[in-house]
Length: 250
Image 1 (tube, one colour):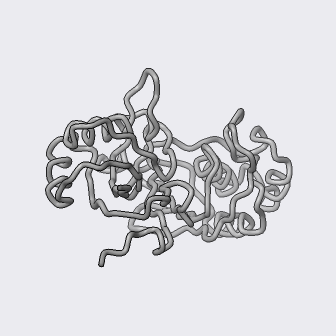
Image 2 (cartoon, rainbow, N blue to C red):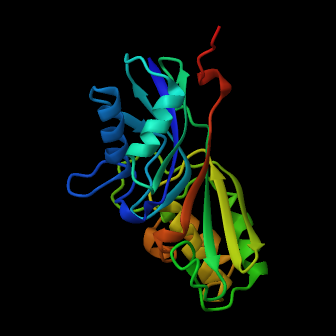
């Protein structure tokens, strides 16, 4: 039987989602918890991988097991077993061929920029001291929607077959004393969101012109784009799936 598990986590203590040979990851901790409670080796497949230090307010993974269990009880036990920085939200049955990664239709990220020093969000948002031109930020952000190939924002030496991504939404909003950047796409390249935000910041502070973003994207060269903003202010916030993946309960 295949199940989807929905979780959230604070990524500060982890070297990303995916299991690493010499570093602790969210996937490793989750699999240990599931294997212990279900009394059999459990492997998970996540909807995507977040980099070291990146958070997720929503991430899905799937796992297979023939063990019998009560879902509410397992959620309760998992939340008791797992460290405080990982929380299980739900577990539900899906069709045998449902895949947490390949069947996801969209993923959405949030990046938080603090506009003033605040001791209560120093580990949740990126404090940016130079003043940003919001109009330039928004104008440059609209340019992203005109393109599909985002190789210029991808981490070098990445093993992918295509650099094409369909960006469905990219927008900025002012939330109290923070600027929030929300971006939604069918898929993302490694380091893509952090590189996009760094490039947009360079435009917002006047380091490069808005129209230069066209040339940066067309270059397909990571060195032409801006810096990668710190990981601690990036959040994977939403993953969407077609309803057809769920197993109908008679």
